[in-house]
Image 1 (cartoon, one colour):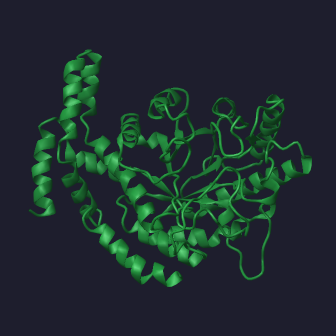
Image 2 (cartoon, rainbow, N blue to C red):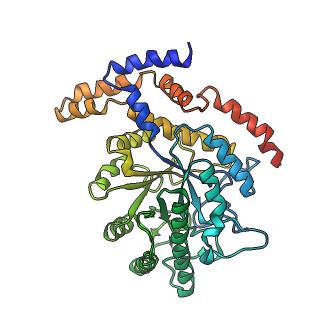
Image 3 (cartoon, helix red, strand yellow):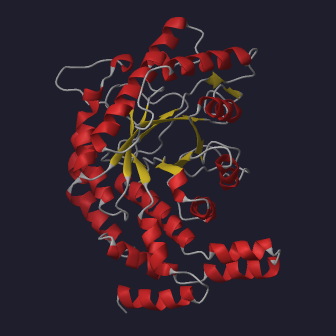
Length: 417
């Protein structure tokens, strides 16, 4: 059977449970994912030569990582050729500033011009751009950044945040799409701190000074990202969820939820509806934690599907969906592609779920039929709808893309050895 023939048969089966398949495909096509740039080079970036720091580690020694902007751009475009959906964005870190010749400036002096090539890449591929100040992998980030007790260090990082707002506004102007600027810092303490309030008071003051920078609020959307703990800050993270949730609410910015930044037994999907009752939008970084915030490649698993169902049920336009994972133990282009496609799969799966009927059954407290319908949906031929969606979007189906990716590895990546 052809992809179209399998689709027609699958569509009939979904119709039997009240799902409008054509509408589901139209809906998922409009959802925007923000693809992170840092999977392609193991979060190395272009502005520093030192190792990763700040509680971030990339493990594995698979060869052929991107070493230059040109190589990274090439890999990004290859991944995009495998991902359905035509409204995506690219998510940058400040450490990916591109300097010409011998020009180099430190992070407190980076300018929009250092991201002009990224803007060109985005416009070439019809992408929006998001941005992150980089408060890690830098000599002045070894102890603390925005919460530092050293005034000179803290001032350096405040200025970096201010410059990042200017860059974000430039990126939004260049692409014609709002830029989400997300702030995450690695500040914290390995052992039990003697003073928790002081570092958080300094962080609050630093954020206040950064946000006092005049900027176009329609172009730049600022978010703050919490974390429960990290390597070297196991006992206390200055930017905790409670701190950022309250700070965001008071200052009219967004609280970003990273799916790997909570206790392993917490259900992150459960948090979204509560956040939306008090915020017009919620920002997300989608990762896969394995026992802790390990940023594993996103899989099409129960956690991801439940997250996607909450997004779809609560209006996808109310979410900034960014991806955040990296693996240096496998082919990076394949890792990138799997994660992006799996997020798209989960969103399509959620759109193909009879959500209205399930809600009706819950409201009637008919939990017997609710459970049975949920289980019935799991055995429907989702893969046939997914392949049709990919084909309709002009990208390779599930049986095809990996063989093409292997050829890219043999013909392009292997030449980097």
